[in-house]
Length: 249
Length: 328
Ligand SMILES: Nc1ncnc2c1ncn2[C@@H]1O[C@H](COP(=O)(O)OP(=O)(O)O)[C@@H](O)[C@H]1O
Ligand SMILES: [Mg+2]
Image (cartoon, rainbow over all chains, first blue to last red; front, side, top):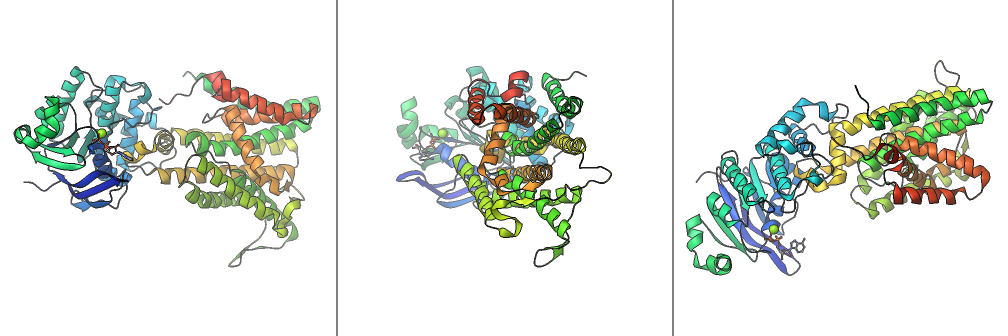
C-alpha cells in the first residue's frame, strides 16, 4: 500500500470521565475515500477536530505528509493542506460565498498582510475563488451572504473553501447532512472524482453514499474503532451489524 | 460612475465639517473653529478605535491609553524643546522638538509600541475579559501619569506655545483646523483601504468567526495584533493633535472616561462604518456644546440618545441614513 498521507496512532481524548477517543489508529492513503461511520456520540466529530487541530488530544500521534503535526496549530495545518468541512457549518456569515472562498485563496498565497489593494477588484483572488465555487456547484450563489445560504449550500461552500486551499487531504464531517436527495446524489458524484485529487476522510450518516463511495470503512463506537475494512467486509461483520448497522436495517 | 448612498452621505459630512470654520469666521464666532477642530481630532481618534472595534470586533475599553500617550509625546517633546534639555533615555538622549511632523512621528511610534505590548497580552482573551484587561492597562497608564512628577503629575503639563508646521502659521485657529482636517482625511482614506484589503478581509472574518479563519490557514492572533497596533497608532496621533489644540496634557486624557467616549462616538455614528467615527464625533461635540450650555446634566441626555441608538438604530447615524453595510 502507498505511503499514508495522514496517519493517526493511538489517539486518546477524554472529556472528564467520558472517553471520546480511545486508542484510535487510522490512516488515509492517496486516492482513497476512507469513511468513518458510527452512531451519534461515537466521537467522529471529536476525532476530526483533533486531526484538524481545533482540539488537543490527550495522547497519541498525528502525522500528515510524513510530518508529525501534533504540536502545531490549526492554521498551520490548514496551510500544509488539511482542508475540512464542519458538521455544523462554520463560515464568515456576513461575507458572501465568494468572499469566504477568497479568504482561502489569499491564505494559500500567503498574502494576508497586504493592506492597500482592494480585494473585490483583484482577479488573482476572485478568479480562483470563482473556479472553486463553480466546481462545488455554487457559482450562481457566489454573491449571496453565507448566512443566507441553505444548510446544504453552506456545506457546498465549505467544500469550495477546501478546494481553494489546494488541500492535500480532505476531512469532511457529514457533508450530506441537510441536503435533499438530489443534492446528495450530485455531491456523491463529485466526491467520487475528488478522491483522485486528494484522499478524503469522510464522516457520513448517509449509508447509500458511504457504500457507493468508500474504499475503506472504519466503524467507531464509544470512541473505539471496532472494525476497519472494505465495504463488503464491514457489511458482513457481525459485531458491526450488532453495534451499528443492525439498528438501521 | 454611480456613487453609493453611503459615499454621498460621507461626502456631505466631510464637507459640512470643512465648512464650519469658514462659516464661523463669517459669523464672527471663532470659538466654533475650536469646536470643529475638536470634532476632527476626536473623529480621528475614533477612526483608530474603529479599526479594532468596528472591523476586528475588539471592544477595547482602553484606547485612552493611546490617546494619552500621544498627548504626552507631544507635551514632553515640546517641553524639552522649550527648556533646551535633551530627553534622556539612559542609553541615548534625544532633543525635544516643536515640529509637528516630528511630534506626530513620536506619538505614532509610542502609541504603536504601547499597543503592541497591551495587545500581545490582552488579545489572548476575548469578550468581557478583553474589555476588562484593556481597561486595566489603560488605568495603569493613568495612575502612572498621576504619580510621575517630572511631567506635571496630577496637574498635567502645559505646552507654552503651539508646535509648528513648516510653512504654516499654526497659531491661526483656521490653519490648525485645516491641519487636523487633513489628517482626518488621511485617516479616513487609510481606514477605507485597510477595510477593503486582504488584511481587512482577514480581520473582518476573524470578527465573524475565528475558527473559520484558522481553518483556512490564517492565524487570527497575528491579524488582530497588527490591527490593534495600527489602531493604537492612529489614536495616538489624534492624542498629539489634541494636546496641541488645548496646549495642555493631563492624566484625564488617559482616563476611562475618555475610552468610553471613543466607544460612544463609534456607536452613535455607526460601528465599522467608514464615517461612523466622524459622524459620532460631530454629534457628540455638538451635543456637548449645545446641551452643556443649557444644563450641567447634559451627559444624562447623551445617555438617553445612546440608549435610543442602541435600541432603535443599531447602525448608528450612518446606518440610519445609509442602510445596512454590504460586504460584496
Ligand atoms: N467539548 C466537549 N466537551 C464535553 N463533551 C464533549 C465535547 N465534545 C463532544 N463531547 C462528547 O463526546 C462524545 C462524542 O461526540 P462527537 O464527537 O460529537 O460524536 P459524533 O460526531 O460521533 O456524533 C459525545 O458524548 C459528546 O457529548
Ligand atoms: Mg458529529
